[in-house]
Image 1 (cartoon, protein in one colour):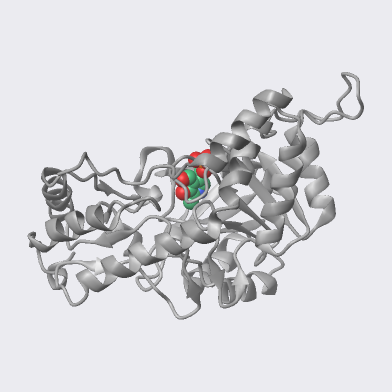
Image 2 (cartoon, protein in one colour):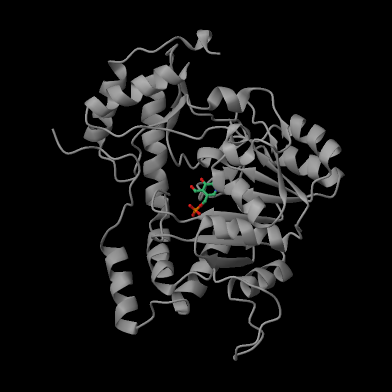
Length: 373
Ligand SMILES: Cc1ncc(COP(=O)(O)O)c(C=O)c1O
Protein backbone atom coordinates (compact mmCIF):
# COMPACT_ATOMS: atom_id res chain seq x y z
CA UNK A 1 0.00 0.00 0.00
CA UNK A 2 1.34 3.45 -0.92
CA UNK A 3 0.98 6.56 1.31
CA UNK A 4 -2.16 8.38 2.36
CA UNK A 5 -4.21 9.57 -0.62
CA UNK A 6 -4.88 13.30 -0.33
CA UNK A 7 -8.16 14.99 -1.27
CA UNK A 8 -7.00 17.57 -3.83
CA UNK A 9 -3.39 18.68 -4.08
CA UNK A 10 -1.46 20.72 -6.65
CA UNK A 11 -0.28 18.82 -9.72
CA UNK A 12 3.16 20.32 -10.34
CA UNK A 13 6.00 19.29 -12.64
CA UNK A 14 9.06 20.44 -14.52
CA UNK A 15 7.25 23.24 -16.39
CA UNK A 16 6.22 24.85 -13.11
CA UNK A 17 9.73 24.50 -11.64
CA UNK A 18 11.25 26.13 -14.73
CA UNK A 19 8.76 29.01 -14.63
CA UNK A 20 9.51 29.76 -10.98
CA UNK A 21 13.28 29.50 -11.48
CA UNK A 22 13.00 31.93 -14.39
CA UNK A 23 11.28 34.48 -12.14
CA UNK A 24 14.14 34.29 -9.66
CA UNK A 25 16.72 34.57 -12.43
CA UNK A 26 14.96 37.61 -13.93
CA UNK A 27 14.26 39.14 -10.50
CA UNK A 28 10.53 39.37 -11.32
CA UNK A 29 8.98 38.00 -8.13
CA UNK A 30 6.69 40.75 -6.86
CA UNK A 31 3.60 42.63 -8.01
CA UNK A 32 4.96 43.69 -11.38
CA UNK A 33 6.34 41.54 -14.15
CA UNK A 34 5.64 40.15 -17.58
CA UNK A 35 3.92 36.98 -16.38
CA UNK A 36 1.08 38.90 -14.70
CA UNK A 37 0.05 40.50 -17.99
CA UNK A 38 0.43 37.23 -19.88
CA UNK A 39 -1.60 35.39 -17.22
CA UNK A 40 -4.38 37.98 -17.45
CA UNK A 41 -4.55 37.62 -21.23
CA UNK A 42 -4.63 33.82 -21.00
CA UNK A 43 -7.45 33.78 -18.43
CA UNK A 44 -9.54 36.28 -20.41
CA UNK A 45 -9.00 34.18 -23.52
CA UNK A 46 -10.19 31.03 -21.73
CA UNK A 47 -13.35 32.85 -20.68
CA UNK A 48 -13.91 34.19 -24.19
CA UNK A 49 -13.77 37.85 -23.11
CA UNK A 50 -11.30 40.67 -23.77
CA UNK A 51 -10.23 41.66 -20.27
CA UNK A 52 -8.63 39.95 -17.29
CA UNK A 53 -7.25 41.36 -14.04
CA UNK A 54 -5.11 39.12 -11.83
CA UNK A 55 -5.34 39.53 -8.05
CA UNK A 56 -4.15 37.84 -4.87
CA UNK A 57 -7.04 35.40 -4.40
CA UNK A 58 -10.59 34.58 -5.44
CA UNK A 59 -12.11 36.42 -2.48
CA UNK A 60 -10.37 39.67 -3.47
CA UNK A 61 -11.52 39.07 -7.05
CA UNK A 62 -15.12 38.76 -5.85
CA UNK A 63 -14.79 41.93 -3.77
CA UNK A 64 -13.54 43.91 -6.76
CA UNK A 65 -16.09 42.33 -9.12
CA UNK A 66 -18.88 43.59 -6.86
CA UNK A 67 -17.37 47.08 -6.71
CA UNK A 68 -16.91 47.38 -10.48
CA UNK A 69 -20.49 46.12 -10.94
CA UNK A 70 -21.53 49.21 -9.00
CA UNK A 71 -22.47 47.54 -5.71
CA UNK A 72 -22.56 50.16 -2.96
CA UNK A 73 -22.83 50.00 0.82
CA UNK A 74 -26.41 49.16 1.77
CA UNK A 75 -27.19 47.43 -1.55
CA UNK A 76 -28.52 43.88 -1.63
CA UNK A 77 -26.70 41.12 -3.49
CA UNK A 78 -28.15 37.68 -4.14
CA UNK A 79 -25.87 34.73 -3.46
CA UNK A 80 -26.69 31.02 -3.37
CA UNK A 81 -27.22 29.66 0.11
CA UNK A 82 -24.97 26.72 -0.71
CA UNK A 83 -21.53 28.13 -1.55
CA UNK A 84 -18.13 28.73 0.00
CA UNK A 85 -18.30 31.43 2.66
CA UNK A 86 -16.08 33.75 0.59
CA UNK A 87 -18.98 34.45 -1.78
CA UNK A 88 -21.03 36.03 1.02
CA UNK A 89 -17.99 37.50 2.80
CA UNK A 90 -17.11 39.49 -0.33
CA UNK A 91 -20.61 40.99 -0.31
CA UNK A 92 -20.02 42.09 3.30
CA UNK A 93 -16.57 43.46 2.39
CA UNK A 94 -18.36 45.67 -0.18
CA UNK A 95 -20.65 46.92 2.61
CA UNK A 96 -23.67 45.23 1.01
CA UNK A 97 -26.26 42.80 2.36
CA UNK A 98 -26.28 39.20 1.12
CA UNK A 99 -29.68 37.73 0.25
CA UNK A 100 -29.51 33.95 0.29
CA UNK A 101 -31.39 32.04 -2.40
CA UNK A 102 -31.58 28.26 -2.37
CA UNK A 103 -30.10 25.92 -4.98
CA UNK A 104 -31.92 23.21 -6.93
CA UNK A 105 -31.68 19.54 -6.05
CA UNK A 106 -30.77 18.75 -9.69
CA UNK A 107 -27.85 21.16 -10.12
CA UNK A 108 -26.75 22.17 -6.59
CA UNK A 109 -26.61 25.69 -8.09
CA UNK A 110 -28.85 28.78 -7.87
CA UNK A 111 -32.59 28.11 -8.32
CA UNK A 112 -33.80 30.44 -11.13
CA UNK A 113 -37.49 30.27 -10.11
CA UNK A 114 -36.70 31.22 -6.52
CA UNK A 115 -34.27 33.84 -7.81
CA UNK A 116 -37.13 35.47 -9.67
CA UNK A 117 -39.17 35.73 -6.43
CA UNK A 118 -36.15 37.08 -4.54
CA UNK A 119 -35.41 39.74 -7.16
CA UNK A 120 -38.98 41.02 -7.00
CA UNK A 121 -38.94 41.17 -3.21
CA UNK A 122 -35.43 42.49 -2.61
CA UNK A 123 -34.47 44.63 -5.68
CA UNK A 124 -30.79 43.60 -5.54
CA UNK A 125 -27.96 45.44 -7.28
CA UNK A 126 -26.28 42.19 -8.33
CA UNK A 127 -26.53 38.41 -8.39
CA UNK A 128 -23.55 36.13 -7.80
CA UNK A 129 -24.12 32.81 -9.56
CA UNK A 130 -21.76 30.11 -8.26
CA UNK A 131 -20.64 27.21 -10.47
CA UNK A 132 -20.60 24.76 -7.58
CA UNK A 133 -17.95 22.02 -7.70
CA UNK A 134 -17.10 23.08 -11.26
CA UNK A 135 -20.66 22.52 -12.53
CA UNK A 136 -22.08 25.62 -14.26
CA UNK A 137 -25.19 27.26 -12.86
CA UNK A 138 -28.24 27.53 -15.16
CA UNK A 139 -26.91 30.76 -16.68
CA UNK A 140 -29.47 31.30 -19.46
CA UNK A 141 -32.33 31.15 -16.96
CA UNK A 142 -30.42 33.32 -14.45
CA UNK A 143 -29.57 35.94 -17.09
CA UNK A 144 -33.20 36.03 -18.29
CA UNK A 145 -34.44 36.73 -14.77
CA UNK A 146 -31.69 39.30 -14.16
CA UNK A 147 -32.29 41.17 -17.43
CA UNK A 148 -35.98 41.66 -16.67
CA UNK A 149 -34.97 43.84 -13.72
CA UNK A 150 -31.64 45.18 -14.97
CA UNK A 151 -29.57 43.39 -12.31
CA UNK A 152 -25.84 42.75 -12.84
CA UNK A 153 -24.72 39.11 -12.96
CA UNK A 154 -21.36 38.00 -11.61
CA UNK A 155 -20.19 34.42 -12.07
CA UNK A 156 -18.30 32.91 -9.15
CA UNK A 157 -16.32 30.43 -11.22
CA UNK A 158 -13.74 29.98 -8.44
CA UNK A 159 -13.39 26.24 -9.03
CA UNK A 160 -14.85 26.00 -12.51
CA UNK A 161 -12.00 26.84 -14.85
CA UNK A 162 -12.50 24.89 -18.07
CA UNK A 163 -16.24 24.34 -17.56
CA UNK A 164 -18.76 25.33 -20.20
CA UNK A 165 -22.45 26.12 -20.39
CA UNK A 166 -23.37 24.35 -23.62
CA UNK A 167 -20.46 25.35 -25.81
CA UNK A 168 -19.81 28.69 -24.06
CA UNK A 169 -16.99 28.75 -21.52
CA UNK A 170 -17.77 29.91 -17.99
CA UNK A 171 -16.39 33.35 -17.25
CA UNK A 172 -18.07 35.01 -20.23
CA UNK A 173 -21.69 34.26 -19.33
CA UNK A 174 -22.48 37.27 -17.13
CA UNK A 175 -21.24 40.84 -16.74
CA UNK A 176 -18.07 39.76 -14.94
CA UNK A 177 -16.68 36.56 -13.48
CA UNK A 178 -14.01 35.46 -11.05
CA UNK A 179 -11.67 32.49 -10.78
CA UNK A 180 -9.60 31.23 -7.85
CA UNK A 181 -6.13 29.75 -8.20
CA UNK A 182 -5.87 28.46 -4.66
CA UNK A 183 -3.85 25.29 -4.03
CA UNK A 184 -6.88 22.99 -4.13
CA UNK A 185 -8.09 24.23 -7.54
CA UNK A 186 -7.48 22.44 -10.86
CA UNK A 187 -5.12 25.26 -11.87
CA UNK A 188 -3.15 26.76 -8.99
CA UNK A 189 -0.95 29.83 -8.86
CA UNK A 190 0.02 28.99 -5.26
CA UNK A 191 -2.67 31.50 -4.40
CA UNK A 192 -4.42 33.89 -6.71
CA UNK A 193 -7.58 35.04 -8.37
CA UNK A 194 -8.75 36.83 -11.48
CA UNK A 195 -11.63 38.97 -12.65
CA UNK A 196 -12.67 38.62 -16.27
CA UNK A 197 -15.13 40.85 -18.08
CA UNK A 198 -16.22 42.00 -21.51
CA UNK A 199 -16.54 45.60 -20.23
CA UNK A 200 -13.27 47.47 -20.75
CA UNK A 201 -14.16 50.22 -18.25
CA UNK A 202 -14.88 47.58 -15.58
CA UNK A 203 -11.45 46.02 -16.10
CA UNK A 204 -9.72 49.40 -15.96
CA UNK A 205 -11.49 50.14 -12.69
CA UNK A 206 -10.66 46.71 -11.22
CA UNK A 207 -6.98 47.16 -12.06
CA UNK A 208 -6.99 50.64 -10.58
CA UNK A 209 -8.67 49.48 -7.35
CA UNK A 210 -6.28 46.51 -7.08
CA UNK A 211 -3.19 48.73 -7.11
CA UNK A 212 -4.05 51.21 -4.32
CA UNK A 213 -5.94 53.45 -6.80
CA UNK A 214 -2.72 55.18 -7.81
CA UNK A 215 -3.22 58.00 -10.29
CA UNK A 216 0.38 58.41 -11.44
CA UNK A 217 3.91 57.20 -10.88
CA UNK A 218 4.17 59.11 -7.60
CA UNK A 219 2.31 58.57 -4.35
CA UNK A 220 -0.95 60.05 -5.54
CA UNK A 221 -4.31 58.31 -5.28
CA UNK A 222 -7.89 59.23 -6.10
CA UNK A 223 -9.78 56.88 -3.75
CA UNK A 224 -9.08 54.33 -1.02
CA UNK A 225 -7.94 51.32 -3.06
CA UNK A 226 -6.58 47.89 -2.20
CA UNK A 227 -3.29 46.03 -2.42
CA UNK A 228 -4.77 43.14 -4.38
CA UNK A 229 -2.39 42.80 -7.38
CA UNK A 230 -1.11 39.28 -8.08
CA UNK A 231 2.68 38.89 -7.68
CA UNK A 232 4.63 37.80 -10.76
CA UNK A 233 5.84 34.65 -9.00
CA UNK A 234 2.24 33.43 -8.71
CA UNK A 235 1.39 34.46 -12.26
CA UNK A 236 4.37 32.51 -13.62
CA UNK A 237 3.23 29.39 -11.76
CA UNK A 238 -0.35 29.94 -12.94
CA UNK A 239 0.77 30.34 -16.55
CA UNK A 240 2.78 27.14 -16.45
CA UNK A 241 -0.27 25.35 -15.03
CA UNK A 242 -2.54 26.83 -17.71
CA UNK A 243 -0.28 25.27 -20.32
CA UNK A 244 -1.28 21.93 -18.82
CA UNK A 245 -4.99 22.72 -18.38
CA UNK A 246 -6.27 20.42 -21.16
CA UNK A 247 -4.35 17.49 -19.66
CA UNK A 248 -5.43 18.27 -16.08
CA UNK A 249 -9.07 18.84 -17.04
CA UNK A 250 -9.14 15.56 -18.93
CA UNK A 251 -7.74 13.82 -15.85
CA UNK A 252 -10.38 15.42 -13.58
CA UNK A 253 -13.18 14.40 -15.93
CA UNK A 254 -11.86 10.85 -16.26
CA UNK A 255 -11.65 10.53 -12.46
CA UNK A 256 -15.25 11.78 -12.15
CA UNK A 257 -16.44 9.38 -14.85
CA UNK A 258 -14.81 6.41 -13.07
CA UNK A 259 -16.39 7.37 -9.73
CA UNK A 260 -19.79 7.95 -11.41
CA UNK A 261 -19.64 4.48 -12.99
CA UNK A 262 -18.56 2.84 -9.74
CA UNK A 263 -21.33 4.44 -7.68
CA UNK A 264 -24.14 4.22 -10.26
CA UNK A 265 -27.37 2.68 -9.00
CA UNK A 266 -26.53 2.88 -5.29
CA UNK A 267 -29.43 3.78 -3.05
CA UNK A 268 -27.20 5.30 -0.38
CA UNK A 269 -25.09 7.67 -2.54
CA UNK A 270 -26.03 10.33 -5.03
CA UNK A 271 -23.27 11.28 -7.48
CA UNK A 272 -22.66 14.94 -8.19
CA UNK A 273 -24.88 16.78 -10.69
CA UNK A 274 -24.56 16.57 -14.48
CA UNK A 275 -27.27 18.78 -15.94
CA UNK A 276 -27.95 18.81 -19.67
CA UNK A 277 -26.54 22.32 -20.14
CA UNK A 278 -23.30 21.55 -18.36
CA UNK A 279 -19.83 20.59 -19.47
CA UNK A 280 -18.61 20.34 -15.88
CA UNK A 281 -15.00 20.94 -14.97
CA UNK A 282 -15.44 18.22 -12.31
CA UNK A 283 -13.33 20.24 -9.90
CA UNK A 284 -13.93 18.49 -6.58
CA UNK A 285 -15.60 15.12 -6.93
CA UNK A 286 -18.32 14.78 -4.30
CA UNK A 287 -21.23 12.50 -3.43
CA UNK A 288 -24.29 13.06 -1.34
CA UNK A 289 -25.24 10.76 1.55
CA UNK A 290 -28.66 10.45 3.17
CA UNK A 291 -27.68 11.97 6.51
CA UNK A 292 -24.84 13.72 8.33
CA UNK A 293 -24.16 10.59 10.37
CA UNK A 294 -23.78 8.55 7.17
CA UNK A 295 -21.47 11.18 5.65
CA UNK A 296 -19.24 11.20 8.73
CA UNK A 297 -19.23 7.41 8.75
CA UNK A 298 -18.21 7.33 5.06
CA UNK A 299 -15.35 9.78 5.74
CA UNK A 300 -14.09 7.61 8.60
CA UNK A 301 -14.43 4.45 6.52
CA UNK A 302 -12.47 5.96 3.60
CA UNK A 303 -9.94 7.30 6.12
CA UNK A 304 -9.32 3.79 7.48
CA UNK A 305 -8.51 2.73 3.90
CA UNK A 306 -5.80 5.41 3.81
CA UNK A 307 -7.57 8.14 1.86
CA UNK A 308 -8.75 11.62 2.73
CA UNK A 309 -12.43 12.45 2.35
CA UNK A 310 -14.09 15.59 3.68
CA UNK A 311 -17.50 17.18 4.28
CA UNK A 312 -18.28 19.92 1.78
CA UNK A 313 -20.18 23.24 2.15
CA UNK A 314 -22.92 23.95 4.66
CA UNK A 315 -25.79 26.40 4.10
CA UNK A 316 -24.59 29.92 4.91
CA UNK A 317 -27.98 31.20 6.10
CA UNK A 318 -27.60 28.76 8.99
CA UNK A 319 -24.19 29.98 10.13
CA UNK A 320 -23.40 32.57 12.79
CA UNK A 321 -22.24 35.49 10.57
CA UNK A 322 -25.31 35.18 8.34
CA UNK A 323 -28.23 34.21 10.58
CA UNK A 324 -29.92 37.61 10.34
CA UNK A 325 -29.90 38.14 6.58
CA UNK A 326 -32.80 37.61 4.15
CA UNK A 327 -33.10 34.06 2.90
CA UNK A 328 -35.29 32.35 0.29
CA UNK A 329 -35.20 28.61 0.96
CA UNK A 330 -36.74 25.42 -0.29
CA UNK A 331 -34.74 23.14 2.00
CA UNK A 332 -32.22 21.95 -0.62
CA UNK A 333 -29.19 23.78 0.82
CA UNK A 334 -30.15 22.49 4.26
CA UNK A 335 -30.34 18.94 2.90
CA UNK A 336 -26.89 19.24 1.29
CA UNK A 337 -25.37 20.61 4.51
CA UNK A 338 -23.23 17.99 6.17
CA UNK A 339 -24.26 15.28 3.71
CA UNK A 340 -21.96 16.00 0.74
CA UNK A 341 -18.59 14.25 0.92
CA UNK A 342 -15.63 15.09 -1.32
CA UNK A 343 -13.37 12.23 -2.39
CA UNK A 344 -9.73 12.23 -3.58
CA UNK A 345 -9.63 13.73 -7.07
CA UNK A 346 -6.30 15.48 -7.67
CA UNK A 347 -5.51 15.49 -11.38
CA UNK A 348 -2.36 13.56 -10.42
CA UNK A 349 -4.39 10.78 -8.73
CA UNK A 350 -3.18 7.41 -10.04
CA UNK A 351 -5.55 4.72 -11.30
CA UNK A 352 -4.39 2.41 -8.47
CA UNK A 353 -5.07 5.02 -5.82
CA UNK A 354 -8.51 5.76 -7.22
CA UNK A 355 -9.26 2.02 -7.17
CA UNK A 356 -8.33 1.99 -3.47
CA UNK A 357 -10.92 4.70 -2.85
CA UNK A 358 -13.52 2.97 -5.03
CA UNK A 359 -12.92 -0.35 -3.24
CA UNK A 360 -13.26 1.36 0.12
CA UNK A 361 -16.58 2.97 -0.86
CA UNK A 362 -17.74 -0.37 -2.31
CA UNK A 363 -17.22 -1.91 1.12
CA UNK A 364 -19.39 0.71 2.83
CA UNK A 365 -23.15 0.91 3.19
CA UNK A 366 -25.02 4.00 4.38
CA UNK A 367 -28.60 4.93 5.12
CA UNK A 368 -30.90 4.87 2.10
CA UNK A 369 -31.41 8.22 0.37
CA UNK A 370 -35.15 7.53 0.41
CA UNK A 371 -34.92 8.05 4.18
CA UNK A 372 -33.11 11.39 3.81
CA UNK A 373 -34.55 14.29 5.76
C1 LIG B 1 -17.18 29.22 -4.71
C2 LIG B 1 -15.93 29.88 -4.20
N1 LIG B 1 -15.87 31.21 -4.19
C3 LIG B 1 -14.77 31.87 -3.77
C4 LIG B 1 -13.66 31.18 -3.32
C5 LIG B 1 -12.51 31.96 -2.77
O1 LIG B 1 -11.31 31.79 -3.45
P1 LIG B 1 -9.92 32.02 -2.68
O2 LIG B 1 -9.75 30.88 -1.73
O3 LIG B 1 -8.91 32.05 -3.77
O4 LIG B 1 -10.03 33.34 -1.98
C6 LIG B 1 -13.67 29.79 -3.31
C7 LIG B 1 -12.50 29.02 -2.84
O5 LIG B 1 -12.51 27.83 -2.74
C8 LIG B 1 -14.85 29.11 -3.75
O6 LIG B 1 -14.93 27.77 -3.75
